[in-house]
Image 1: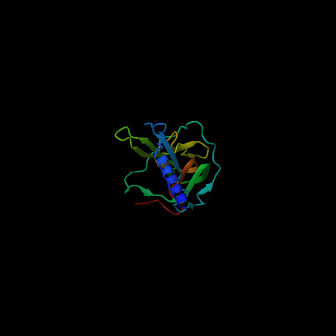
Image 2 (image 1 turned 90 degrees about the vertical axis):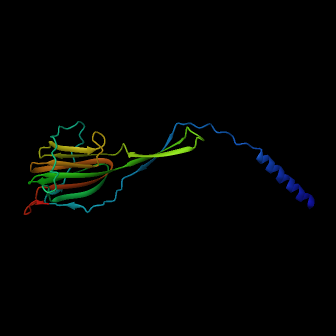
Image 3 (image 1 turned 90 degrees about the horizontal axis):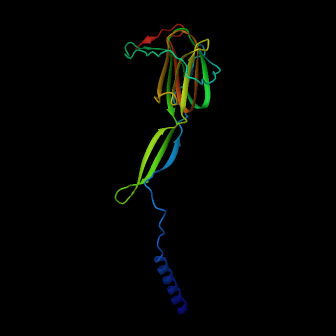
Length: 220
C-alpha cells in the first residue's frame, strides 16, 4: 500500500515538472494595422407620436415611380424666423413610419396655402470598434469606437401638383445632405400629392395647410 502511495506522488511530481517546462508558442506576431468589428443599430420602429389624418383634406394615394434623374425644383422659400410673425397652421397629417424600402403617398387638398411638409429622420447607424496595438511602450491593446450613419439609410420626399409636376423635393443621405430635419414649402394653393420613400430610416412626417374651413391660421 505504501509502495502505491509513493509511486503516485512520484508520478504527480514528474507531471508537474513536465508542465513547467512547456513554453508558450509565439503567435504570428501583431500588427499596428487595426481590424474592424461592426455592429449595426436599427432605428427605433415604435411610433413616438399620435397619428393624425384629417380625411377631409388628406387621402391615401398611389406613389409615383422613383425618380432616376434630378428634378428641376423651384428654389425653396423659408417661413419667417421671427416667431412673433410666424403663424401656427392646422396639422392635417402626422405619422411615424419605419421605412424599409417601400413608398407612401397622400393627396393633400391645400386650397388655402401654404402647404408645409416637415420630416424628422432617424437613420440606422453603424458602430465600428477599432482594436489595435499601440506603437509605443509595451504595445498595449487600444480600442476606439466610431458611430456613423449606415450607407443603407436614405429618404426622399416629393411634392407634385395636380399635373404630376414636381414642385418641391428633398431627402436624407445619398444625393441629399444628412441633416435630420427637413421642411418643404409650397406657397400656391391647390391639390398636391406627397410621396415619401426610404430605406433603413424612421420618418416622423407632419403636414400642415394654410387653414381649414371655418378656421383661420392663428398667430403666436
